[in-house]
Image (tube, rainbow, N blue to C red; front, side, top):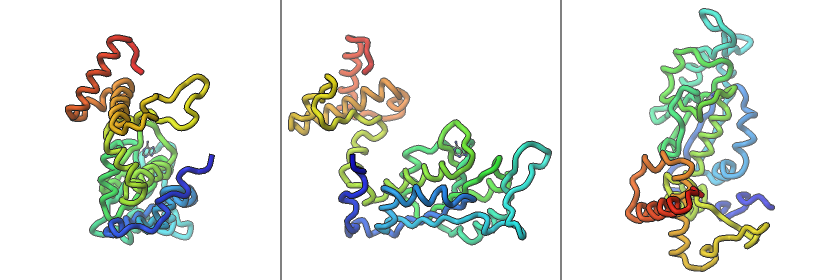
Length: 269
Ligand code: ADE
């Protein structure tokens, strides 16, 4: 199969509406620029930059390292394994990069768990700086230099580069014009719910059929089916998402019918 997101409507020049806001600027500070260069040049992140919706600059933190060896890390006071990022290179880098409109982000497993709401918030800012630590962490005084610490989940990675890619990808696709308007509208239609099931050809695969409603041509019936299936999946897999969401009248009705079906069959999906 060809790459579905390589050549699409999004390759066209941005429309007048998309051009009304200046590009989102992102500066990333890392000791391993190559970890970011490749992924950010591909697919939607690459296209978003080519089209001028965002500008990403990747900086080698060693540029601000100390002495002849451009040192950025040191042993931890009190003893212990591993090296810790020193505050001076970070302070020097931020003295150059930080502006009044900047949001400086530190990826950290102890930070706020990154979610779609934070991605939306950051996509509306004008300048982000992401500081990627390596080693065993950062000198505590570095935390005072950042605006927020964000985690991508309860596991420990070997550095901040992969979290930075996660943030940037999630943020860039929310910029107006990054993906076609229809996809964004569809996402907001089931906002806060898990995705409804999707099908493509063939109509039958190893005995498994595409639900008839999807090829009925009845747009309203398709819309209702999708909403109901999104509710069913969310109830089955992530019920806590429903608890944190106000349901519309239609959603409550559809959820009640999912519940009734469950009571009948004892099956969740
Ligand atoms: N650095 C190491 N692990 C991380 C995580 N889970 N999220 C963000 N930054 C991290």
